Image (spheres, rainbow, N blue to C red):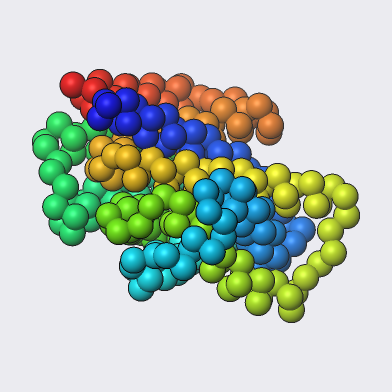
Amino acid sequence: MAEAARYRAILMMIGAMAMFAAMDAVNKTLTHLYPIAQIMAVRFVVFVALACALARRGPWLVFETKAPWLQAARTAVLLLEMLSFIAAFKYLPLAEVHAVAAAAPLIATALAALFLREKVDPIGWGLVVGGMLGAVLVVGPAFEGLGPAMWIAVGATLLWGVYQVLTRLVARHDSADITTLHTPLVGLVVAGAFAIFEWRTPDAFGWFWLVAGGGMGAIAHICLVRALARAPASDLQPYNYFLLVFAAGLGFAVYGDTPGLWTVVGAAVIVACGIVAMRRAAA
């Protein structure tokens, strides 16, 4: 049973990375058409609808949390992380942002080891570092001329690592349903308060992609919450690197970006680290 739960957590984590890559590609276009607060508000509306549909006892389940302050801190970190990443996608290419974000698994693993007392052996650390090196190979050239916008991506990456550890910590107190509901309800109130003052009425095309992006983000976060409720955060970190593989594939399919040699080599390293981590998790 434990092995089956871990395999489900792994598949959910990989699915979350696929949805995040698709959402990021959509958000990059949306940031040039609509305010960031509006994008986040619509995303949370979709998230709330989906979370309520999945909750077993309705939206009022959110009031049953046993760790309200921890949930509030986790949601606040998520809101800042989302705002930072969306802003970074507006000013930087997807590849550069994802390359910076590749440090998040290492941050999450270190924080999980320090604060959650999760055991990370040398091989586990090696897999995380190996995946990060693969991420660097995917990007290729060093960061040049990115300017201050790069620090937005760095800040978002730090927040992403902290968010994953807080999600794992919250799972010790609340069910996945409670956590899944808490995130969009609070997020909708905060983002909606700002979106009201800078709302731009979308056309049919705009509504489609706003809702589609919101759906992708909702599915991704639901998968992430459930994955972290079933397996240690440190065990799941190597699978974060699949995000780069999916992002490279979308870049080729949507924008016609042809992967170079180093991109292929880096993606191979990332996948190899993920496969080794999966085999070790099943052992």
